[in-house]
Image 1 (cartoon, rainbow, N blue to C red):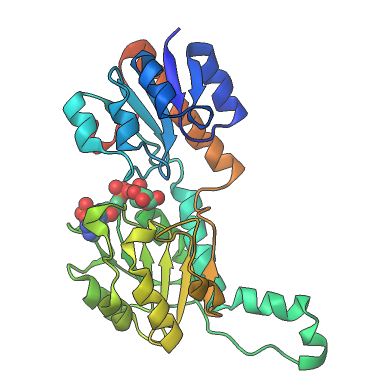
Image 2 (cartoon, rainbow, N blue to C red):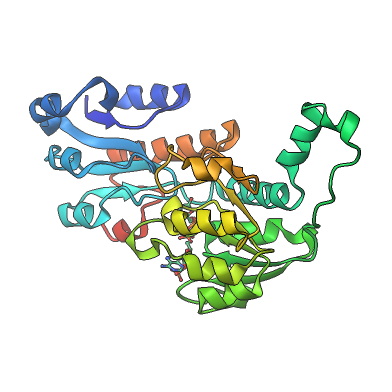
Length: 314
Ligand code: A2R
């Protein structure tokens, strides 16, 4: 039976299908010593976008043919090295678009309507003696800038429609959409009430949202990040939120997750989620199915459903 290394978690449904075709080795049960003995037998890897695959692990798998990533982002997989070695890398685009879009809208609404503050007001009993809660701001009719108008960015724009927004976007190249393109991120932030980040991570997007962009978004502005923590300069973000240079932040991703700076946790004008953008049972099941579909199709037919763009020509 062919052998595979499972780096990430897997659902029972995924395990059942993988174990029918492979001897499955869980990375959590092994170490580099074991890998130096057994690495030659492993042809396939399943991981996720957060864990990816460490360069040392990849080097210790001389006969690796394929990495199936359970997630759309794959910035922790060295696709340059994979391409050089002829290793196919797949990911799970599209099946999570709607869920991540829901998370973005949820964060935006929670910021505008001070959902957590008002929930605490009721739960703490403060409402019984304190009278009406302070008024909030409306999320309707806002100008919303989307950084990254790809599959998920477009799903976010569509899902926002009932709030009657004006949608702006920034990416390196204009897309075939009806929204207004900005080739300059800071200019877009200056024009927007809300900035929603949904680009890939990695070196090319690191700290795209810096102090200048946050200052342009301004004291009544709201930053939402459902892409990757590395895209936002977290130190600059904390300072902007502390000084009032930025109004609100709704964050699902962080620079060093799961570690979240205490300063961010202490701020009242943040809504913080533990990277659950796609984290529903239904969407994770769909992602798991596609992850294993790619794995098994590669094993049996030598083809895959959803290669990462870098490996599409392999
Ligand atoms: O820049 P373009 O024209 O390649 O547009 C892509 C944009 N993007 C960037 N925008 C500005 N500066 C950059 N350096 C940059 N790099 C990429 O991000 C495109 O509009 C968007 C990515 O869209 P998709 O490839 O369709 O990705 P999808 O499925 O929307 O997922 C986005 C990310 C994942 O990579 C995970 O990190 C996260 O959402 O879950």
